[in-house]
Image (cartoon, rainbow, N blue to C red):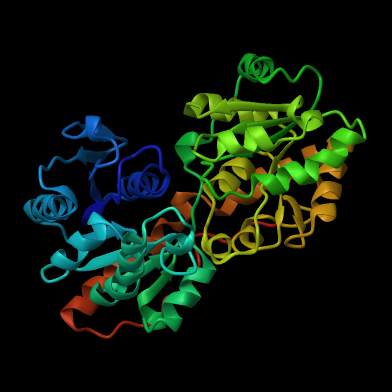
Length: 407
């Protein structure tokens, strides 16, 4: 099959294109498909015009001189020139979504949803001016109705699509997965270098990952870790990521916790692998909000695949990946004492952390890689082709290629 993937923005710093669209494209190539990934790098203009091949996926970073509408037109024109059999656009907002509407007149189009974009979600986060937020909500409501099928990264988004009127047989559950190419052994020397960079000494590392927006949940992690610092429990809190919320977080940390906290910024992939291998656990604080219920955090998948247990609230997609007593610990949402107790338990019992990490790696590598779930994307593509041609489409079973293991 000749498949064109439409990215929603540049490969970096956001993760949808680099951590969802591109790894899926690699898996599709391994299944024998021809795959192009078209990227509108309006947020990284220096990358415009640069193309490369990644594991068989032809990645083209397009150019335009006409703003947002220009990017949508550029995506649509290039996709049309490639004469695809199916198009998979990522996100219901922005230029890829606009291009998907233009292209749906001629080609089978699948639209991917991986976040709650409209009111109640990112449109209400304060990150956008009111007119932009209103446009995001309008796009999220309208554009899924104008394409043929949807893929959704979380169970919450599947249910939400149904409540908004998309027939269930046109919605396909496609969670984020580990990329087999990233599942590599980390040399002890690399682990030692990361520990040295984190100034951890002999203390276990509590790791936090990801972009830090102005409104974030790391204050919950700080509140959960402070009692452990006050009790002189040995640990170092290492924050890997960047974002506008970091400055305020640094200012707000109590001195006792600040001395144990390391801000390492954004890391290259090999350094991130070393960070995962060097840490005792990944701490994922999250308030019970629509955004957190709907998202499918790649940091959780990456940590578990690397053999790192996860401590997270019992919320949304965390329930899909974190198996209590097998791959990590789930705590009641908004329960800080429970979060503190869960972290303390793994800090105090390295053997338990190791056992959970081994179960985590078995769970993700055995059932949540893109090679296991690529068949769900293929089913969405074939169903979109049938929908466009007017054939009946029957409900698809939300299962990967293989049977999920019991860790």
